[in-house]
Image 1: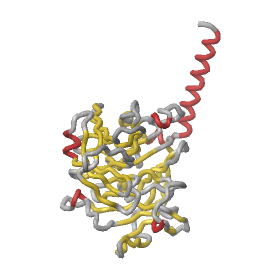
Image 2: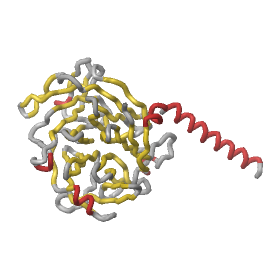
Image 3: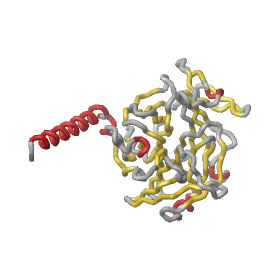
Image 4: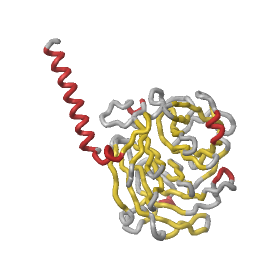
Length: 318
């Protein structure tokens, strides 16, 4: 081995060592709390992951996202290392090429959020579809927000919106919180009801949550905690924890009906966990938080940037 090659190998090893040590230092709490579930599927294509959930009875993880080309958006199913990819279609049978921001499931339905709607998939059709096949939405439910993400906790379905510069929300969603902050985004909670159309009582929200900017996901965890996934661009992501025990902070007027309003500001804040960049939609699974990241997508360099998380993970929040 010549001297030049030797020094190049040593330099590469030194850089790798420094990166590993920096990751340990920068994300110490994350590394202690995290369990990697699987590598996010679809990263070898133009897939951009947005949401993740789990079919508990089927022990199957779900991932949704859009394609950074003209192909249909899709859902991946991962069970015991086996991966199945399903392309999405609109109710009229045409390809669904839009954003697919969040995914969650309850009863016989899987829900995908985007553009002020929850798009409905029959779970049985999703499970029955072959790898590379298609599933057509059974219908949709309109919701009063941009529906950037969604989650379920067994009693409620939560659907909320992302707000930041360039991502405006409805003016009525700008609210003052008890600590004097101005928040511009909301999460709406709907009761799950097997007797209702598509499994949710969409006639009126049961509760509303006022949230800060740059929220990519929302879930309710045991112990009366709301957990928020916050990220934007290449900066660090955060899981933010809030106490939602006790009474509401006020009411939100929805179609002349007063709905309990919870303001997730500093008065309810518990703590936060720093994570790698570009965390997305979240779900509470077995008392832990399931998190997916979009940083590993080809659109964002395919993991070329240091500290990119290419796995879907479970975060221990106890």
